[in-house]
Length: 461
Ligand code: GLU
Image (cartoon, rainbow, N blue to C red; front, top):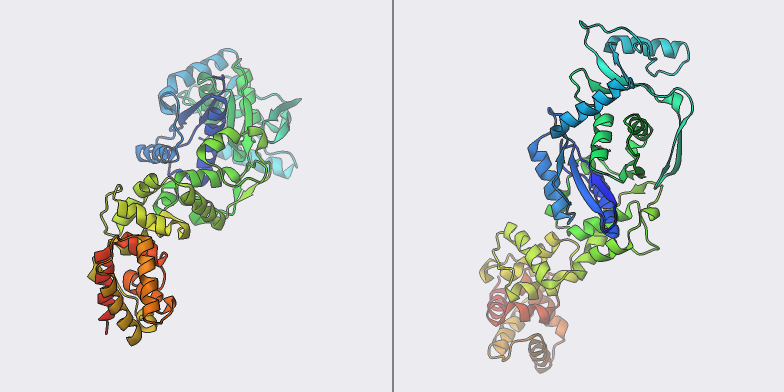
């Protein structure tokens, strides 16, 4: 057991997107790789925008992705007294001052600064002002005005910020309720976080937070900032992880794909969940941005569908069949057989369900594709199908091999080639020109359904 403690700290104002899921995953993998702890903190201090439904959506998505968290989740909104206590410490030590500037004052200050060619930071004008009990105020944390704030980012390397670029930061409202940078520091310290791993969009917050740690006399954790994900359209940016689940992605495929958007391990592309935990190293995270490529994501999913244990694959496919109106027990051997005949062609669970639903339809209800019928169910073909149905009637046992032998013997006897019956058979059984291998398909479908469907096609007008 190591002393590594990392966290994922989502704001519950929407669903879990790919970017958030990747941040969570890097933290989770790092904790699991090292035998450390992965903690969850729900940053719900924005009471207007935070919802319980969003918290639920985020935790459900993490659970679906297999990211289990240690300890009870921390709700930031319940830590107000700790935030206030920390603010009191800073007040006592005179690290903060009351700022009475209104938004209009700030706008005017900014305008003047631009005119004078100065930086637009807050100029500290309220620092040292006497208290004015009648005026509303916020608490500003005093930043150093010279020197540098330096830290060695676990991903980005050494980050140096000139302190004159750090403006005195508003950290709390007059009622003591904290703003983001302050609450994060107080909570990360209280949770004993050793490494803060988050998106690069937070990189500019880090020097400010380091100063607050120091102001509070707290140990500064290590920081690692992850490269952003490019290529996200507006639609993809707002899509939650559940939409990938609904499209038929496997959780391990989503994880495998998103981890590769910012991390590499030689040129290995496909990782089982266990292999990922074993191989993951924060030191291998790339500094450069990754670009989302849905085709590659689908390819990754295809690979994981091939590697998936067949019992689990049946369990995962059953709900997709149900959505097509087909109720099937995940333990039904016909389902396992159907999946085995079609998985190599399926890039998603949805595609797999679409590709095998014909097996489970009522024989008379299999929709026959008009074009396929016109092309393949010629009079000759229909005569072959009728005769083949009769030839297969007494076949014992009914298996892929016995069906294959019987059909080949049937062709020899009628001096026709296999192709003269193969496509008509396929249309008869599946309703379309595509489908699994003929003999395997017949074996899975069973004798009765095969013969009924062959006869039905033979009688097609
Ligand atoms: N709640 C912040 C966010 O959702 C994350 C804070 C952090 O990781 O420091 O962006």
